[in-house]
Image 1: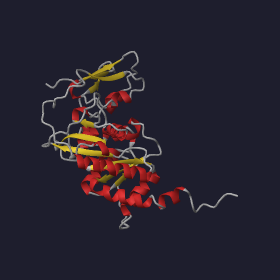
Image 2: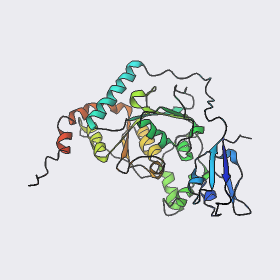
Image 3: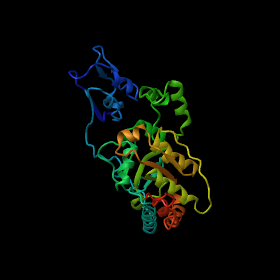
Image 4: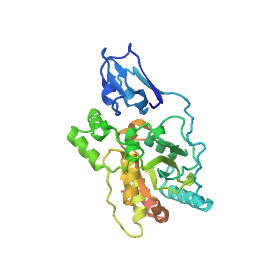
Length: 327
């Protein structure tokens, strides 16, 4: 029997027996309503530490805490992948600096890699606490490098979409989305789940994110954070030399996992995303910010196009040259 990685506790004095914790848990069999109306822990070992139950407790009576050695690394003795060649690292850093300067970006572009099941892991630190993928992304835009095998992910949605685990029943059916009032009914939820892409279960073993200038691995996708105006210029920098228009897929569901990473990776085309419920509820991302994921091979065009736009088009637009002066 698997050992528990988390301990679940309920304060009976604060609990109002509403049952929301049991209803919202995305993993079947972890919790059930006990004979006294309080939540009862049935299979603690199945808990993934996502905090969905405690987050929906109106009285904060339920707590989920990691147990054991949070810094334990089961891959400590495993051979690690060779890092990027120094010349390539320096070039990616140069591209990052050029793009950020041309577009006036505040946040560093994030290099994302989905490590295949048969690949060596890169030499990178694992977090001491479990994180959602979107939380790791927000930390990476600030300068952190983060390697997360599935047991370091706290969002079962993300691990299943990225092919690191199977799909929990409540996520596969869309039940959890109805409970969160994100969609009107089970039919709408099922359609949303069916339309989103996912990688084959157990096809990936970890996610790795880092600022583009610091990545030790060739990224699958690079994700930019910025204002809608900056995302406009990012689009225009890719269209500067050929005038190409883009067809984006955005929904507000699974923003970082699907829209910023998986779609650009699978289609080899850039994609925008406005963020999603989880991304905005679990991170410090501002209301005025959005994201764009781009295939790595577009970085050269972005840097060159943005540099050209920065010579005239960007400053002219920001200076509002067509606005009549107020007398």
